[in-house]
Image (cartoon, rainbow, N blue to C red; front, side, top):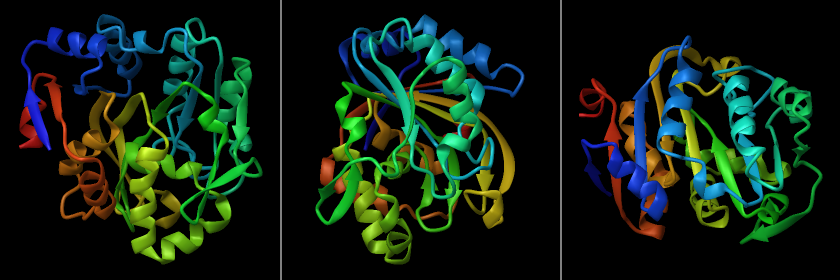
Length: 275
């Protein structure tokens, strides 16, 4: 993967307007995360390419646990506020591994803002090879992904690419986590099956050792936030923050979809983290 670090953030603005692949990494604290997020999305006009398009917002709802196991409700609300005036059709949803996403606090955010929110479980599927996947998100012109950067027992890292796993039929998920080779292949194929237009990747806090508290995950401050239109390249870049963790699904995806040049802008003091 070819990453070209740029010093002038205006190069990223040009990438946003022309469709070039980019990654932005900036520092945040819990107290200023939304203010920093709004600063960068506004100054770079990050949401401009979604104007006039129907949009499906895909949070990360793994279980009933809150942030950072699942997407920060404040970030989801922010995204809805930014998109509701420019997207003629705006909806959201997920298929959680545990319980119903409609019982999650993220569904409450959607309800409060009168944004349709779907439990994909029970909706129509089609086959991706032999794997059933939900077709509803494919009705939209664009997908916005709201993952959390976390360690994962099986895949090493769960972030933008793994967030698409919520589009896999619920009945086969346990089997895929047992047949891990098939799991890695499925996640890689989902990258091509569900093109994601924009990733708002939260790493203000992360989960170490496991992706959920119920599996022994431990919350840890990381103090970063990512914006990107290139989910695979973003994951390969962020993987450096997951020491000694293999990510076979990313290797498969890289070989399948090839490598492109990506512009990277790093906030002051961030560069040394990725060395």
